[in-house]
Length: 310
Image (cartoon, rainbow, N blue to C red):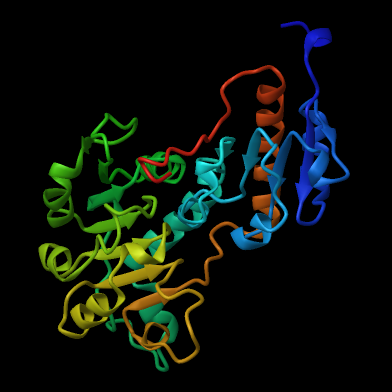
């Protein structure tokens, strides 16, 4: 299709105008709509589905939401209204994977234990080596695949677990749900990078923790509800696992005084793997690409599938 034949869409950016995103809309060949009521498409950078629901017209043809994890948008019923809904799936993979790698290394080298020490004691914790470890990465979307690429130079063995069991580039072994328990049981480090769905809710629970090596480490950069928090605390208190690093928790925000903050085996980062500045830049590029595709009548990136839950 020639540039002259491209139909410019009218795109509303809300709830507030984010300059990077507004510029991306124009760069993608669309025009900015001053009112949401005049828009063909809406790019929403807010976090509250109810806020959007109160103003969103039925007449739009495309809604872009800012999150990679989309359970709240699905629960709010946006996929049932006749327009295409796209997520930011895969958009933030690189930056979140970097943070995940930092958490993996912190677990292997017992950084949380040493950082909290009040006296000089080099024998507080036994450190391992990432190079001699098996890392099981559960979920191989943008985050999981980016993390696998970062892990490769360390020489560790990598097992990827996906919904389909497809071969994941960079993994030494790729398995589906039927291989999950074996992949968890053989792992030295388990990293959660999967979406929150009915199948992944409380994936880490009493039974799966008991499958893990007592010396294994657990990292979560996905969604807090992939872990049964009470089961995790109970397991740690009875000597299971060597280290846990969580960028996401259940509940979230984690309330002041929660036991996770004080447990000697747990390292908490408060959902900061995708910092705001990086998130805006990555999201803006995604918006630009999707505006171009929308104007050309092409399939959009990140179309949400209600059956899969992402």
